[in-house]
Length: 338
Image 1 (cartoon, helix red, strand yellow):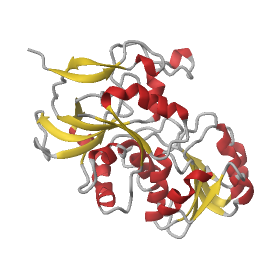
Image 2 (cartoon, one colour):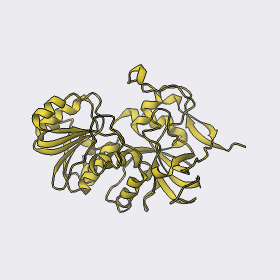
Image 3 (tube, helix red, strand yellow):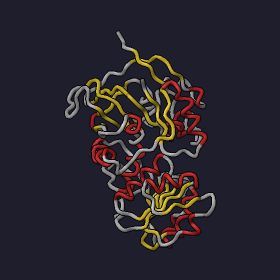
Image 4 (cartoon, helix red, strand yellow):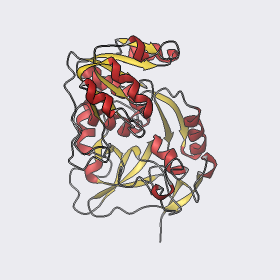
């Protein structure tokens, strides 16, 4: 007899209203997988991109319809069941993970649910001393910061460029983080600070106190001044917003500096970067339990802190997506699973 759980499923592409709280079969872990009883799930931009069928992409790049699907990659919870050939995990352990990303980017990773199965190598042990909500807010954003700034940690082909992404040493360097108050930016700021950088954070002024509290040495309110006008002689810009507008930061960097772009689609400044002697690089974040374990002590001791913008019950996933669409998010949006 199939066991049933509650999940957020969608049966068509569209706006937040397509997200339905309903019964779904509890997944069974396969070989090398663990099943997690989800306590909280974090939201990330790929969730709303998939929800609406990647409508911004050309039709030939959009996912094939395969409904119902369950969104969500980021979870924190408790190991419920382990599959064959799993070592290092046992029922009852608290864990966190980014589930099957980017491998399931077009069909949903299943995190908006009471249970989810995850390849064991993608699972990290949840940091002690922080709640499941904070832990669920970490995986994608923290792994993005880690793989851009600390260690890529894999040798998968880079879909954005012909060469691997290579992080640069940050100790004593001047680093600007654009989009510093958002889910990825506020963690990248802290990772850069932990690495010994002098960090300039760019965000709207209402986030200033928080960003200073998280370790920013300087905060630039982009609603009052253009950061590319007032900044110069930087060693690195990490643009967590990205796109075509990232090219404006090239003039802020010293020769030999680097521009790292989280979303490089639309960037057309490579010729200018070459002329200025600046490295432009990006990478695709990938699931890694080992990196989540490496970062866990920093979350446990408060060196890195996950800020929560909004926490809502799983059943209110549509409202959580509406909050995301409103913009000006401070930290992370998470769903609490009862």
